Every structure is written in structure tokens, then in C-alpha cells.
Amino acid sequence: MNVAVDSPVVLLAIVASATVVVGIILTLLIRRYGRRQSSPLVDVLRGLRNLVLPFGLGWFVIVPLLGYPQSSVYAKSAQTLFWVSVLWVGTSSVKLMFFTRAEGSTWRARVPGLFINLTQVSLIVVGVALVIAGVWNQNLGALLATLGVGSLVVGLALQDTLGNLFSGISLLFEQPFSTGDWIGIGDLHGRVTNINWRAVHLETRERDLHVVPNSVLGKEVIHNFSRPTTSHGVILRVGFSYDDPPNDVKRMLRDICADVSGILKWGVSVRTIGYGDFSISYDVRFFIDDYLRQPEIEEDYMSRVWYATRRNGFTIPFPIRTVHHQALPPRPVVDKIEAAEQTLSKLPLFQDLEPEEVRALAERARLLEFAAQDAIVREGEPGDSMYLIERGAVLVRRAHGRSVRTLAELGIGAYFGEMSLLTGELRSATVIAKTDARALIIPKTAVQPILEARPKLAESFAEVVEERSRAHNDLTEFPSDPTDESIDVPGLGVALVGKIRAFFGLRHDD
Image (cartoon, rainbow, N blue to C red; front, side, top):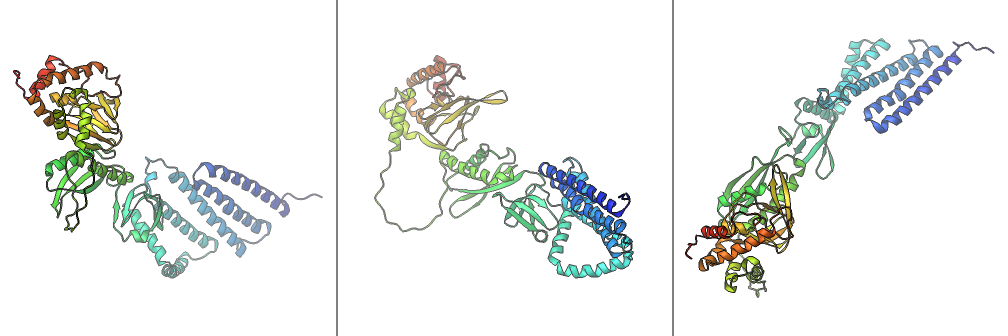
């Protein structure tokens, strides 16, 4: 039996087979690009498979195969659905080609996503109106009037949704922030991850997602921490005792900023704010360029304030209160002076001192606390003291061209800085606390009375320094407990004795 090629059965079989083949190809593409590329391309492919292909097949079956006239309701419905699906897929394809894949330096990449989505919806609405007017032979003016009445009813029912929409449109044109900016809305701070027609998505430092409706944003004060620049100012307030000189306190607070990672080197300022009931208040202002790390940077700075306060002999006072208390028996305490005396007596530098002289030296020495990464001394700065490490470890570093070389790591019992103590020479290296550390500092004022009473000790000090300098002449071969300031120092021997005498103001006839 011969079947005509143009018979309805043959045409249906051919069209159905072609539809199945195209559907399979689209499914394979969706599986492939769904794993490797962004979702807009997958959405376009799904639209072709799930909308355009079925509605086109339905239109073909209804009109050519089943013989329904173009003026029938079935034919018009199928034609309308087909063209609407083509509109959606077409606008999505344009969006994918021109905006989703745009490079970051082009104007297309800077177009807000909300504007693109609204434009797409507007084009679809206009296209649907033209399709209805053309396919159903409707008067476009009457149709718009009907839509106007219907939109009034819909608008009353969707006040909140439309409020979000129009608030989103106003934010779109004003653009107070963009994706990636850190913003604050009331007590909520977060990074903008998405902006759509209904809401803005914020990711907080705690990695929580907050969805803020656009209507709420339109009523709130928005703080953008990423504009006009990524540099963000931070103000911290601290209080110190009335006995601490304000200029010295402000100098200390400024110096701390240089050691904190994340604080920019410019824009640091410290101001005296006021005189409170029990302390003088200071505001420390500095700038950071990573808003995400602000709590971490503030914590690091405030921790260093405590260590620096102890080192400089300042006081962070408690609130003043009137308290009635009962005296308790004193607790036994460790004799810090006796411990310092035992430590100092073991140092080669002070081996020729009498016990009472070591005792006097221990009484004038001070214990200082350092946080990890604190600079204990800096290369090129003046100094008149030496340090003995009692706890923790430190790193000795020296500038080498544009880089910095770590020369050694010093541990408990090591000491450094005796050249500055004895001659006042500039620090020849930088010493950084590797861990939280404690050091015994011996200033010039502690050695001055001893040398004035026994000027001959200058020769003993010079001899010990000379021995250490010879033992550690190569900066690249540091032992476990070298000194950073007694290495390769010119003018040892007789010349060094003369420098010590001159620095302490001793007469040559002593």
C-alpha cells in the first residue's frame, strides 16, 4: 500500500520525529552546559525545549494537520502561546549574549541587573500586547483601557509587591550601592550579593544571608562603606589616667598603629576628647581598606594598647567608687627585684659588679610586656637601654636593600642592645616579638650611678662587648642567643672605652 508523502499521518510522523530529535539535542546541551556555564544559557535552552518546541508543534498539529482554520480559538491560542514563548526565549538570549557574558571593563557589565530584568519584562509585556492585538484582531486602545482598569485592581491587591518594585526602580536610578559593596542599614551590616526587583541580599561577616525588601531600603538611611573609596575610617576611644601626660599617650597610641596589620600608614590621628570622672578620653582614628577585617583589626589594636600601656608605665583607670572594705591578710608575692637580681648576676656584662651594685641595678630595671608582632626596638632609632628576654621569643631583622632579612631568633635568657646602653649609638637592627614576650629593660639611668662610683668598670664593659662582637662577627651565622647591636661594631677596645666615658659623662682622669 502506497502512502502519500503529504498525507497527515506522514507529516505528523516526520514532525514528531524531528521534535523528538531536537528535544534530545536540547536535553544533552542542558546537561552539558548546566555543569560548566552560568544558568542563563541553561534557562534559554530549557525555554526552547519546554516552551517553543511544544507550542510550535501544537500549532502545526492544530492548523496544517487537523485542518482547523486560523480564525479558530484553538489555532489562535496555540499561535499566541508560541509567539509569547518566542518573545521570552528571544529576550533571554539577548540578555545572555550582551550582558551576562560582558567583561568587567565594558559598559554592559556595569548595567544593573534590576534594570536588565525590568527591560526584559517590559519588552515581553509590549510584545504580548502586540501579539494579542494581531492574532485576536483586538483594538489595542481598548485593550490598554481594559488593562488599565485591571491593573488598578491588581495594584490594590499587590501594594507591598509594587512598593518593592518601585523602590527597586528608584534605587536603580540613584545607585547608592552596587553588588560587592559593604553597606549598613540600621544595625545590619553586610556585603551586597544580589539586587533584584523585590529585595537586596546581604551577606554578613558571620556568613548569614539577609534579604532586605526594597521598600524597607527606601525608608532607611543607607551607609555605604565601600564608597567613595574602599578606605574606611575607624575611631576607637580609650581612657588614661590624669597622671599620664597627654602628648606621651598620643604618641604611644600613634606608634601602635604602625605595628597592626591592616591599618593604612596614612591618616592616623589621635585627639584628646574630654576629661571624664576618672580618666582622660582619647579618640584614635585610622583607616583600613578591608571592611571585612575591621573587628579583627580593632581587636588586635586594643590588645596592643594594653601591652604598650604596661611598657610605658601608663594607667588605664577603673571607675572611681566609694567602697567600704575589710582588710584581708596580704597574699605572698614573688620578690621581682630578687628574681631580677639573680638573672642579672649571671650575665657576662655584669660579672664584675658587686652584689649591692647588682641589687641597685635590679631595682632600677623594669619588666615590659610585648604582644606578638610588636616592635621592641627599630633599626636606626636612638636608644639608651638593653633588653633581657624573660619569656617568649623575638626575631632580629635588618634592612637589606628593599627587603628585610631575619638574622636570628632569640629565646629566654638572651639579651640585646648593650651597645646602645653603653654608647647611645643608634639601633643597628629591628627586634620583633615573635610570640607574646616579656623582657627586663635596663636603662642608662640604672647604670649611670654605678659607673660614676666605679669608672674603671667602663673597661670591663668594653672587654665583654668586644668578645661578643668577635664571636658573632658574621650576621648570617647568628647563634641561638646573639645580640643585634654588638656585632661588627667599629671602634672597639680603647676607642669603645672612650665612647662609654663620653656617653656617661665620665672624666678621663677617673
